[in-house]
Image (cartoon, rainbow, N blue to C red; front, top):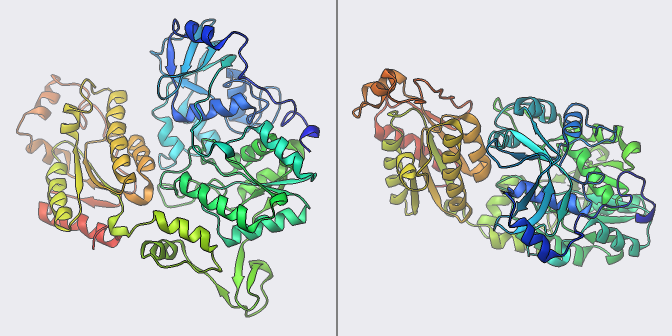
Length: 567
């Protein structure tokens, strides 16, 4: 059990949250230091570093570890660790080797003091290609990495807080606490189940069968840090997990605990990483599903990873990491058996019942019950509380194209059409946003990305609360647009490429901006001396040279109707 776990995973867990000096002294000292405000991703990483979940790591990775992990999936000392855990900073961040820096949380609260041992450059394209197997900006982390700093910093830390969210405090346990809880169950084997989704009857059956097969305890360990935008929120999910474990699992056979992980959606590498993390929490076995931690399809519509690559990678390293891989076999409900069976073992002519994800969402939106063979009634009731009719759900229309392409004109017409349907809608026009939300930003690539991500953040919040938002901005860089897609959620994001040729845009230029750019009076102007990266697979392409604004707006509202956002 936890006391006999093999090193380096789950051995003597590190504990970075015991600074030698008093808290008051450390806070006074930190007030004299330069500060870095951590992103939510880095804050999640700090929490799991500080509690030992990323053992054997005790800091954000050094250059040697980072380079080795990127290229070989191993730390510099040869220990398997497939995902780089680094702290990126911009070039203008005030850090010096040999000096201390304060790490702060979202509200500027002090989290830790780091003594900076190393500052080193890293190459985004190389890391993306080797870790994620792609540089396609449709991959959520590839898109996000475009906004990360160009340097990483590393060094020992004195951690005083991890700013862990205050919800479900009794379920937010450290590896040490989970291992102690598992030890009280008195069984040698523990099978961990990773999820970022609600659990239905097939998943429940799989967990029970896996636990019985090893005569062990099920560690239901859902991710409640950063998952994919558009996922069911963790508040709803955790309530369903509680209902399920309290009513349908023997208490001595299950432990529900939450994992504050920032996922990378890295497919096979992520699956191996998940297994190592669960070893640190006390698991001896780990269930790996088909398409584990998959980010979906690339720009060409193909899956980023093979369906069973994750299972194969974890199985190859099982002995080394001390975790046995249990594959997630497809289970189907067989009507005559009144229960679930593996699809590969179905008797000839067996009648199976199935329901698609779309059907599930439609039933929930209509307030109709989900079938009991598919999900427990308690779970269905909780999910039903949070689902609304699709025509009342949030969505984002994102118009992109050159200056003068006709984005704003079409967007304004679309807004009026949406309002006519009885929906409230917010218009975020690029020029207006720059006057208010993004005042002070210039036109460097970094500032342009910052402007687009600000618009994207506002849009994502509107959509999250069920609102409709129409955005019209040049947004020249593909990676930033895809990052906004991930912020909003791909199912609720509709990219509209206003594909108007440059010469037409110039002919419409009443303010003479293009002419000034041609003369060199204006620099970094999109289409002249700064590139516009055309969308690879937009949901809709329109050309305002061959269609009237009314026809273009008709095409946009038709997409909204097809997707169910408008009647």
